[in-house]
Image (tube, rainbow, N blue to C red):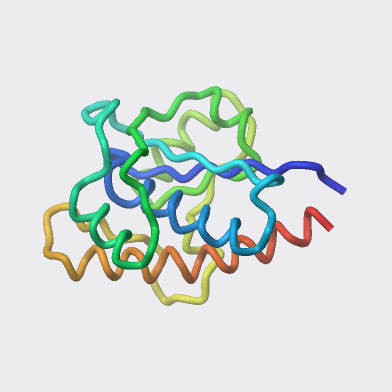
Length: 159
């Protein structure tokens, strides 16, 4: 039996996909009553947005679903994250390659594609940054579905 589980979501800039995943997964965890046993964070492989709030479109799309991500602030992935988190879940193959490169050097938690926990035919959470509002809606749909699968796996570990 494990007392606590920690989950880190990783995308490129930590202003769209990974903060959305953090917010959606936090809502699922709170709804399940496990918020005192699961720690959740997000980060980006890039440094461009450190300290910035999530993209306004991501915040608005999440808010429409009753999820507030406005207080989150971007941070950059660090090698120490591989030791600090039980799950390091990346949004796409580029993120996976970058985090895996660090993992090969340092060890720790092996990164995985987040959508591997879902039933979708998508392997990657598409980056909605350069698209329209519908891209943010798709991201939330994919994240929610994979988040339910991840939560089911974590429940097994906590049992």
